[in-house]
Length: 307
Ligand code: SF4
Figure 1 (cartoon, rainbow, N blue to C red):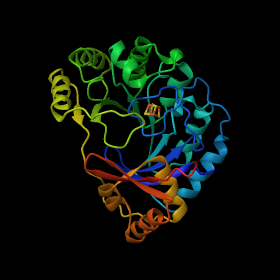
Figure 2 (figure 1 turned 30 degrees about the horizontal axis):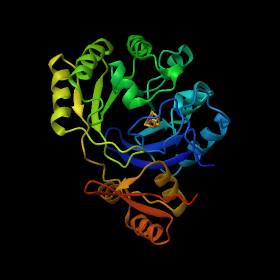
Figure 3 (figure 1 turned 180 degrees about the vertical axis):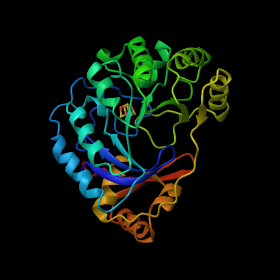
Figure 4 (figure 1 turned 45 degrees about the vertical axis):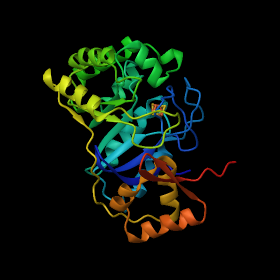
């Protein structure tokens, strides 16, 4: 099983080597409207977890051939549900070789003491907070009932900020007609003012998603960013530029990347070298990769061969 993918050029975090704790299937306690993975019933427990030593050893191998800015712990789902996260973070901190270690979490478990203690050892923690108003939270994030206590999530973030010395980023993803309402913006301003993260990234749907949803307008994103800036928060709309990395990928690595993340034309041109771009065309011709569209944008994704 391959736990490592990329490096990918992230618009927010630079050149990042991905570490997927759940490569075989989606394991998440949310089922967000905007999820890029397939729809799936939210889970409470991460079953059949891989051995953390196996994951760390794959990362060590990958670091022999590339020097990413970041090592990003992620999952086909929610990485903080992985039961050996603490041991894995200790080992990755020991081998990261100058890269920053970070996690992309939906934030649902941030009030759990074992999660808080493990995440406190990271250089960067990205948590999501799409809504601070109950109705919008349930509509957009569709949490499993045991993870649906929005007050506990927000308090967990406030307490984590108080003890965490690294960079805390909160991401707010807006879905048109769902959480881009005045009520939710008011509630977000109140909650984020208490959390006081280092940065707030505001985005909307940019890639094909599990449910039929629409992007929030640029006007609404600007409205929220200005609202947060007015109370002294460092809020920005996620920039749309990619690092021109031109990395080489073999067939297996490219398919592993496409399985986790679809690549827009623009992103493919930025992160793939000429040989990898040619390989991408071959994968499409062979039916192993497919082209999806969202509005006027084209995306390459791994073909679903299960049907
Ligand atoms: S938290 Fe992430 S992985 Fe889980 S459903 Fe939402 S977008 Fe998908």
